[in-house]
Image: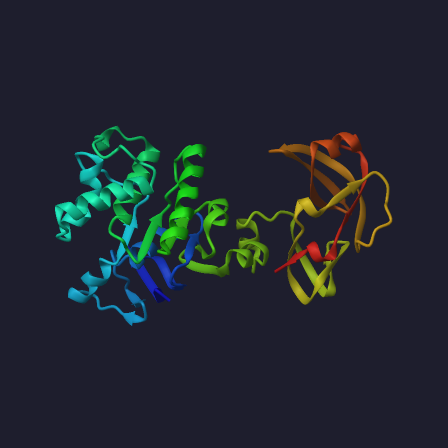
Length: 349
C-alpha cells in the first residue's frame, strides 16, 4: 500500500467530520472516494495530503508511520501533489504557474523549461505557455492545475472533485485524459467525486462515504453490483428497492413472493434493476422464476428509454423499455401487462 489511513477521527466545532475512517490505497491504483456533498471526502483528502492533522488515528506512507511535524513529514509531503476542486491561478503566465512548485524545490531553469514544455503537451495545452492565466476557461484552468501537480512527478496525486462545474464536453475530455495519464505514468491517483458515473468511468477501486463514515469499499464492480445496504443500493443507482422478509431463496414483499438466487433469512432489502424486467401483453412460456401480472400506472421518458411503472399486488415496479418496445406493446396507463425477470437478477442486502 502506498497510503494507509487507520481509524482517522477529526472534529470541528463539535461536529464529527471524520468518524473512525480507515482507507487503504494500493500503489499504482486509481482509487476513487465517492459520496454525497458534505460527507467528509474533501477533509479526508486533506488528511491524506498531510494538509490537515486528524485528532486521532495513524497515517502510513509506503508502510511507514508519519510524524506530526518535522523534516520527515516535509519530505513525504513533497512526494504528494494535490489538485484542488477550485484551483487558484497565480498572476502571470501558465508557464510561471506550472513552474512554481519546481522553483520552490530549487530545480534549475533549464530543467524547469524542459519539464514544463513536456507536461503542457501531456495535458493537451501545447502553445499555452505564454498565455495569461487569467484568460483561461474553466476546463483550461483544470488542465493547468493538473499540469502544475504532475510536473512535480509525485508518487501520489490527489484530485478533489476535478470535474465539478465543467460542461459535458470538457468533463469527458478531462476524464479521458486522467485515465490516459494514469495508465502512462503508473502514478497512484486518489480522487474524490460525488458523481458515481465519473467513478465508474475511470476508477478501479474505491470507497463510498456518508456522514464521516465509510459505507463500503472494494473494487468498482463490487461497489456497483454488490451493494451492502439500502444507502449503497440507492447511491449506485439501483431502483425498485423494496423492503422484504427473506425465507431461503424467496422474499416476501407485502403479498408478492419474489424468487432470488441467494440464501437469506430475516428482514432486509432487495433491488430489481428496471432494465432486467421484461414486459409483455400475454404470459409467455419462460424459464424465469419471477412471473407476474399487473396494471400500468404511468409511463415516463428517462433519457433514451421509457420507465413503465406497474402495480403488481400493490407493489410498484419500474420496467425500463426502449421506444421500439413501447410502440410495439402500445400500452398506456390502465393497460394490463405481464412482467418477468430472472431470480439471479435480484440484488439482496
